[in-house]
Length: 133
Image: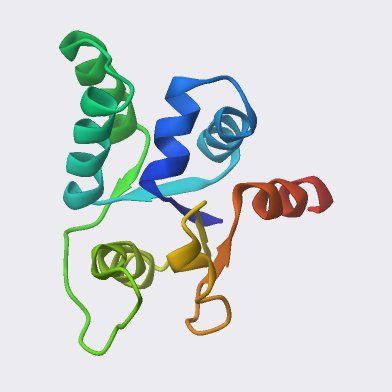
């Protein structure tokens, strides 16, 4: 399964050892994580600003993600609309990358369930799906 993990899920995975950490581990072991340069830039900024990790640790995390993900160039798709304009890049990544699912805690994305050809699930919903497969 191809999976787009939204920035908030990846940040939580490296900030704590909770559900998001388990999801990232499972995605790395059993699925393909789809990333883009824009998402990687956002991850970098949030690890620095919100989690306050040292630069060397951030570089290691980014390198790890790059080495264990499928990278898709940032490419806009006309006609995508959502409440938060910054979420359009996540939707475009999922569509352009042929992802099966977006995993996010972002309500602006979660309200879009069933509007695109990709499933949009909360971390808990994705975890439940993984447990039943």
